[in-house]
Length: 362
Image (cartoon, rainbow, N blue to C red; front, side, top):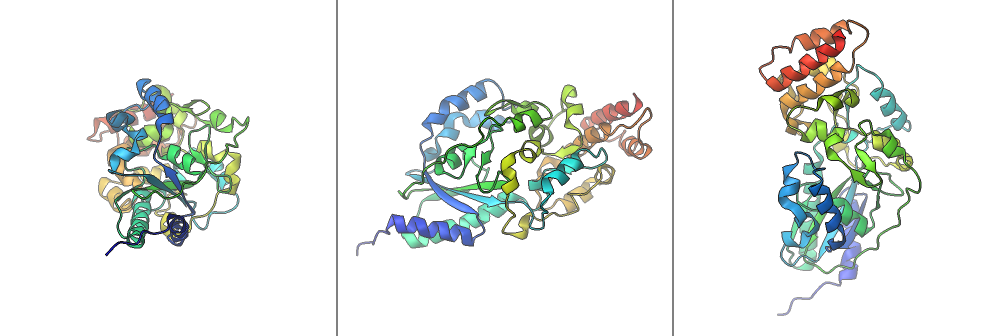
């Protein structure tokens, strides 16, 4: 008995509809040829711009060769999922900018205030892949979201989900850049979608806004200077020259996205998974610095923040508290919070607390 092969054009249309039903804003299809991106990836790695993200160098050019991850892979389904919390107000960009200027406020990237997107996106992609497999009568595939050595933005750009902004993030004309990406690598020769043209024009807002000047030029990011890298990926001491530039950002940084004109079109999430938890959108530095390790783990259960660990959490908060210096003696409440951690068992925490206290005593 022969197996009836599905009409791939019809299947592609169904896949896109199923993706919307699962909470994705859009699903598009790309081939898996990223040969054009290999030279740029090699140059970026050779320049050391990946910093201590050793997995980048370890996987090398494999990131530009997704077909190596699944034998016989022919296509990459690229999906995007909006993450602005459902209740986000119209003035959210202005509100976030104002918060970053409040020395006592703890600024956490919007994407990290709810559930861990890795789990949410992958779970829904897994459901989509299983449905495709049933329809296709079998499927070899792999699902991932920022969890495999692939150049997600390059593939998303190829699939037409948007274009690479000058800050290197993907921008969608109708949704800005406040969304997650997820992929299904599979062995079906589905019809591919065309890319879209870029619409950044002469705008340099993201480059100008970067607090640490990590965006060296259009599409050139030195991760070693990026606040998201410094507060999330870096496991050791934050370079002294960069500490004062971090301000009150304790997990990630949204500055380049807040100034992007296209984010006036940013869309709210279809699911409540990314709604704010634990008051992370309004918390004070002193409040978060008081959490012991047990409370940190309990409150951050299911959050992407939990992955950095309590030690780096305190490191980041200590830097932000140091940057909240106010006057010759500093704010008494902040100084008292820092002094309470001055003898912390971790040398990393003690180092950053000492630096912060020095800022208040200047």
